[in-house]
Image (cartoon, rainbow, N blue to C red; front, side):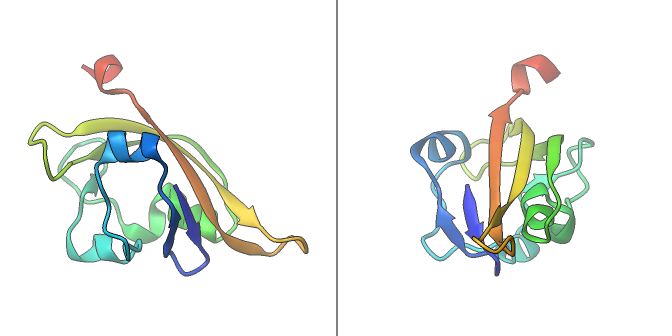
Length: 110
């Protein structure tokens, strides 16, 4: 998943779509404030949008193996995800967005 510096979705590849489901064309991270779908490992407490790995990457931080619980719209069970995120930098080194990679770790967690 790739976003620009404003959190607008630029790339949502087929692997992300299989794992996370279809995202609206105009989705942004701020949409998660209205309808939380990502939670702390307790599975109940919504993950604050500004602390999500992708949001942190958009501020210049890299994260590795952050565990999240993802409540899909199509699945009442949800998924456990391990997330790595890194800033997307321009030629001058300025942060122009973020890149996140999600891995389904549900089996391992169960």
